[in-house]
Length: 85
Picture 1: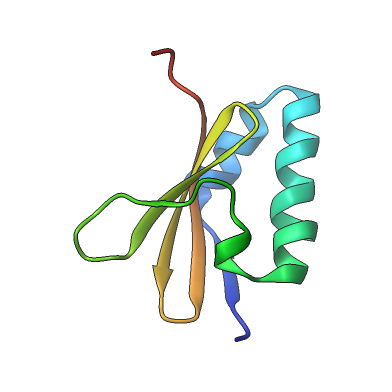
Picture 2: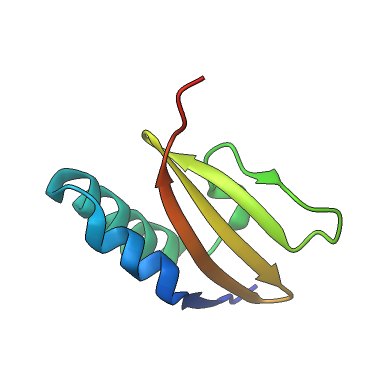
């Protein structure tokens, strides 16, 4: 299945705020690794976070990445540091 990838303004603003090492890791994963694999099952620790089945989150190193899935469209919404537990 061919997925269409989109990037929310909040996601892009979050990426700008990351330190250079984290920014490189996130950009490499989102724009290269995931863009070419386009397989939702390849996302590390993918979890549904709403009842409608549209909002998900996954972890990437020490960051949570929020996405919205509508059919064949995946929109990256946020990337935030993993909260301390």
